[in-house]
Amino acid sequence: GDSVTQMEGPVTLSEEAFLTINCTYTATGYPSLFWYVQYPGEGLQLLLKATKADDKGSNKGFEATYRKETTSFHLEKGSVQVSDSAVYFCALNPNAGGTSYGKLTFGQGTILTVHP
Amino acid sequence: GAVVSQHPSRVICKSGTSVKIECRSLDFQATTMFWYRQFPKQSLMLMATSNEGSKATYEQGVEKDKFLINHASLTLSTLTVTSAHPEDSSFYICSATGGYNSPLHFGNGTRLTVT
Image 1 (cartoon, rainbow over the protein chains, first blue to last red):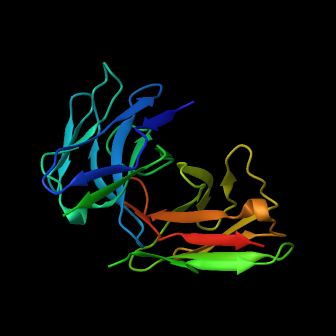
Image 2: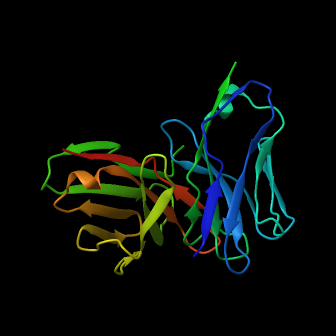
Image 3: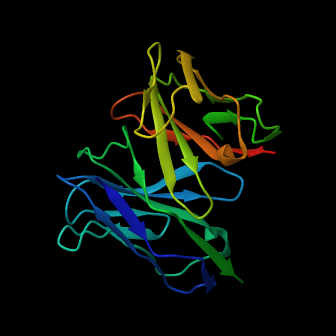
């Protein structure tokens, strides 16, 4: 079945450091890929998405590129802020086309803490 | 602001009792709602999918008689954990969508502790 594997956390960085959170997936067909973020005390929010190979999703300075050859969707940000402290989830939807409708398969989540 | 409200945020109950968790869409009609369970340091596991007015579809390994899901209106779905036991202690999260090509919104989750 489908699966998503994220790098284990927690990840602790200083403000303005470079962030990478690795995500690899296993799926049949052509899934859509997502990154969700969960700030303390809040629900999951869609951060960015990519619907097909080589697509790059971006939002709030975060980026991730859909790499079919390596089945990866690593999250990056060039300069993190304290306000980026949250839990980040990589997810896939087996349906292509970009919608997040339907069953999502999540990674285990990565806790990011950014210190001033 | 939140578009999906999940209540309660925390609940502690005694073993053998039942607990109901509500998931409401605040400003849209949720034709489909999803219920997830999250164990510590693990990913969200989909428990069931509920469509308004019809029976929920449960994932393999999820006991439908244990986790009763009702989606009686376009703005409300409930998850009832019946005869709860300590192993049911977990974090339960709902999500809701207005349909295909509509955004998926998540509730803030409910921390259930069964003593």
